[in-house]
Length: 229
Ligand SMILES: NC(=O)c1ccc[n+]([C@@H]2O[C@H](COP(=O)([O-])OP(=O)(O)OC[C@H]3O[C@@H](n4cnc5c(N)ncnc54)[C@H](OP(=O)(O)O)[C@@H]3O)[C@@H](O)[C@H]2O)c1
Image 1 (cartoon, rainbow, N blue to C red):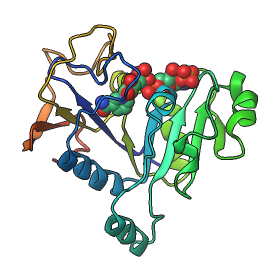
Image 2: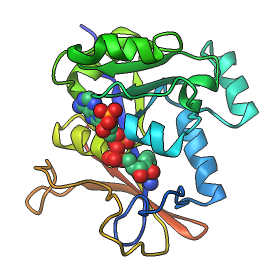
Image 3: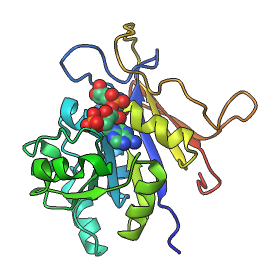
Image 4: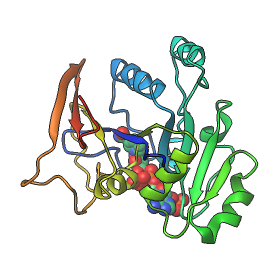
């Protein structure tokens, strides 16, 4: 039996818990030093996952930026960058998005059975579309990723995806960065929406590290006993 991949959630938020603002522009929360840290974390993973809304809104590349880190991965017998993973319920993905066009590595798109044909029509030429049943659950995605040899998954957001991995209890570690400003606009997305989380006042998560990185603060939480800190 293949065990589920180790799941590391990564998020940057404002002091008041927002992960973006409500404008059309992408909000920069991290600083350069933190982005370099994230690059190192990415380089240590087999796959990176974001939700389809993040693909559409932020158009991220999701590549390892550092040439040295890419070379080190290749020296270890790995592809230069982790596999890119997304999930959609609508199938509304643009094959011209940087998720698909940047980097030579594998791209996986998970979707429910009902939109598998539509999703293949949209992005089947540039990605592997996986019918993950209905509804698509974090557990189903993780089981499929494990079967593809993914041992370590980094989930970079957005909030919908983080919320699902957290409430399903299939997250091992959380990297939460707090940027030193407020967004102050309830139309903006939060880190997570309402839900029943395994960590609450009666069951507190364990902090394994708190580190100032320039003007932001990273807190690393252990969310399972697989996280050794
Ligand atoms: N600060 C940060 O660290 C950070 C990181 C990443 C993103 N963000 C921000 O987060 C915001 C987007 O977050 P979000 O929560 O709105 O969206 P998201 O998590 O990026 O994506 C949500 C979408 O993913 C698909 N999806 C999620 N779970 C699914 C499931 N179980 N089955 C099928 N499809 C599923 C659906 O796509 P369809 O709509 O195609 O059906 C859903 O609408 C953006 O503003 C972005 O800038 C911030």
